[in-house]
Every structure is written in structure tokens, then in C-alpha cells.
Length: 261
Image (tube, rainbow, N blue to C red):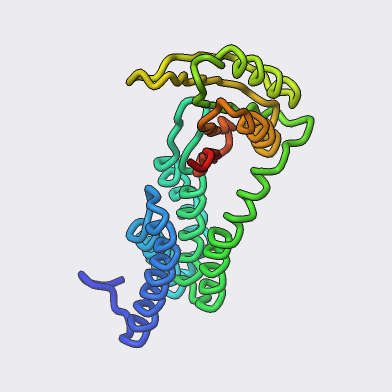
């Protein structure tokens, strides 16, 4: 390198610029899905990550031609550097962890940028397509698996919250039915509370918090359906929040039932 500015052929500059542009476009395509889901790292973040990774790889390509530097060394540093960036979007919320999918997406966007910067444009495009496929196609499959009954050996405890509105005169009867129906399906009842609704309606609200070893929404729905058949019950609702340590907690499942007037 002589003088203030390194001498690079114009054709080489055009090729490298095209590679950087492809990395930017592919990173933006990946980030568009994240932006649509309103995640922490969206369109611009993934586009910049892919572009930055491509620029570092392009620098390695230039050094390879001039000084014989191994470009894989730069790629290795990019991988470790993106790890720190991805850690910044992972948030701990109680016993749950949010942002793991977003961090993994940033990591994958960097790999797309490295591929584009190295000149492997078709492979970079395929990689971006696979990342989008993982988000769009595997998300519904993951949710279906989450709704299946958990294996007996699982360590996940699912917390359910239950609410029923019934006539005040039948409060004790509803509480008895609730305990009986939930005990039948191996739910652990932690608390049952009831209070009169305002307005002199003669209605009482019964709420309960319970846990199940694993997750079994179908069993809870069956118990709720049996309770909803009681003439004194005017509405039944339930929701669940699964505090699994490795979940991104993108989903909260709600179920409800109310009789027609």
C-alpha cells in the first residue's frame, strides 16, 4: 500500500460493491420478517449485520489479493463479534428468557453477509431463504408441538389461571366441582378465590391458579367444558403461561367459553 489511498482496479470496486449490496438486500429480507413480528432486531438491524459482516469479509478478500491473508480468520472474528451483539437482545423475564430467536437470526444474518462478501452469492441467497423458512414454516409446527401433552419425564411446569362466573347461591357447589374436575386430570391446585361481583347482580367470580407437570391444554379444556354445563355458570375462561427456561415466550394460549344468551 503506497500513499494515502490504496489502489484498487475499478472493476474490482464494482464487484465488491455488488457483493455488499447483495448482503444488504438479503439481510433486509431476513429482517423484514422480524420487523413484521415486531421483534427487537428488525429490518435495519439484520440488514446492517449482514452488510457489516460482508464488509469485513470484503476487507479480507482485498488483503488476500495483496498480502496473502487468510480470509477465514476475518470470518472467525465476525462470528465471535456477532455473538456479543446477539447477547444484547436476550432478555431475562423472571424464569423465562426472551430474544433467543432474534439473537439466532442476527447470527444467521452475519453468515449470509460473510457468504455474500466472499462472493458465494447463490449460497448466500439460499441461506437467507432457509432462515425465512425456519421462521415462517417452523413457527406453526413449534406451536402445534407446544400444545401436545408433555412427555412424562419433562421438567416443565405449566401454570394455568381459571375464572368462572356463577350465581352466588351456587358458589360452594362450583368450588367443589372445580376441585373435583381438576384433580381428576392430575392438576395441582394452588389457590381458589371467590368474590361477589359489583352491581347487585347476584353473581360471584371464582378464580383458581393451578399447575400441571408438562402442558396439557386438552385436559384443562375438557374440565372447563364439564364445568360450563352447569346451569348456574354464566361464563368460564382460562389462560396459561408456560415458564420454561429456554422458551422465548412468544405465545400465551387463551381459552374461553360463554353460553349464548
